[in-house]
Image 1 (spheres, rainbow, N blue to C red):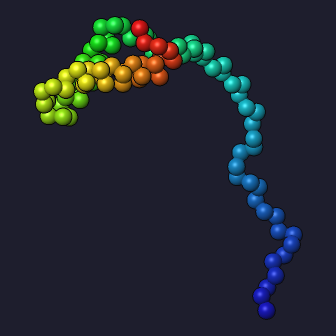
Image 2 (image 1 turned 90 degrees about the horizontal axis):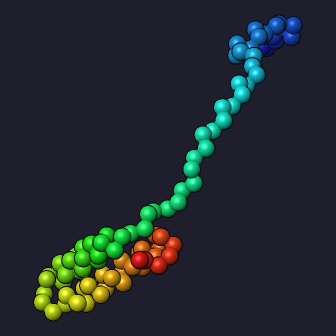
Image 3 (image 1 turned 45 degrees about the vertical axis):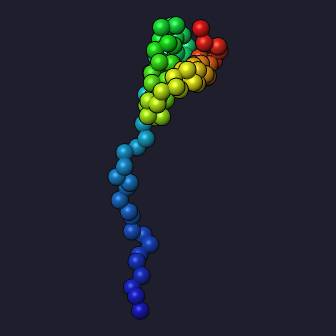
Length: 91
């Protein structure tokens, strides 16, 4: 038979510290509203189109005769991306 533990044994108190009152929260800094990206200038738009057209020409091996199609496709793509990112029509 297993000896029983006496029921009158006192247990040591909980070693964790007693809860204390919380310190008041510091107010959060107010951030200015995010206005989105700045509009793209006509020069920046032209540069984006030129880069896109170059990459299109590179993908087709710089074969002659596709320059106009590369440029027009690049314009469409860049303008669509600008509309999406700026929430309106490009300049």
